[in-house]
Length: 522
Image 1: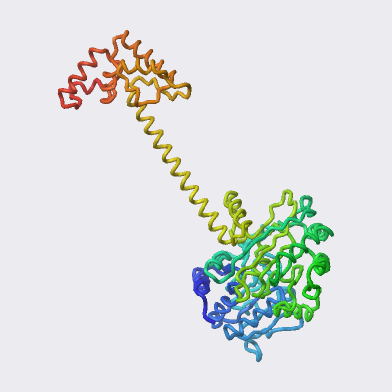
Image 2: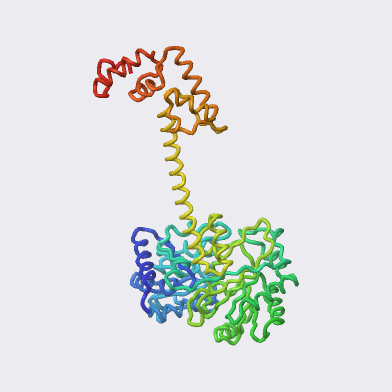
């Protein structure tokens, strides 16, 4: 398979990051966009530099990595996990260029058995786990290796930043971009409210709802039926993966759901399900022989089933990383579907801010205005990515309209201010919000020569202007018309009527320019 455009960009960006001196760099790509395939191309280009260590924490990820490396890049692998041990010396017979290792196995004396310079390159799959001590000890044991972290979800619920391990993000390709470019399918979200579900008293542990308390709330008999009924109805014929908060909830929900659909089309699995049984369940799901695959913390990572057309989140969460992993199981493109339906089961969340598909596709906490509008649109059946686009566009348009409105108001205020100054040489007008001037007042002002049509006179302003004009006449000061001219040319308006007449005459005779002989009086 050839690389997609964004995958080529990712390969080039990682190489550039290393050339720029970043020893531990991060590649962020949404689930289903080919992280493993992209990374296999990167390590193939690094093969000449020395042996490669590929770290994964789950059996499925180890098998997936070994298979992808062989199929997509032609690199053969040794496995380092449990009873499997890879040759330590690259010169020994059977030593392959890539060692795919289990993180739980690479510890203590087993880790110490590897020379510090055994690997030139390290790839950390699902790198959002890398801040854990087990990962950091492995990376620190090989200080000279260039490290590449792979993740779809760089944020962690416990707020422990990946910057504690990695020093650069080489490239990012988000789920929303994948949907827009046709490499991932649309997400349709539907919120289902469970009347008996109350999460308000559940504690927060490491950034998420306490798992034991959450399962206790979700396994309530009423809640189980409020999940099973809508799940059977909304999923229709879609291949569906259901995520639960605990093992007991997974199996209890399977029993309840069997009362709504054919029980033969339902399976529940968890971490204790025997390996071969689990593989058979997954094969039956992929083959369409079962429709509902209910699981607890098994299928969030390293599981590919493009036929999955419905994700039921029956374990509310505050973790965007976890939620992203869950809905990522259904966003791969397949001929059998046009979109993925995400059923979000919620109740009284109390103080908790729960994650939903909008948070995942938005990539960050959304402004309230955008979140409300996007939620309204998704409730009307519009795909999540499109709803976000429209909500964000609407926010941009509203911001532009607000800016234009403020600009217009500023211009109006400037015009009003100008008009006020133009007709008010005495500083009488100050913005009267009271009753408007009576007609008889305006007529009297007009008699004084005031342009009453250039200002919306208030009753108080009109009285103040007229009183000022009367006072000035008694004091022999410049008339209103004289004061207007004096103001225009920068002279004091409090000159006598005769002095004002002399200055105005001099200006007029000089072509309405202030003569040097009187400029000092200005």
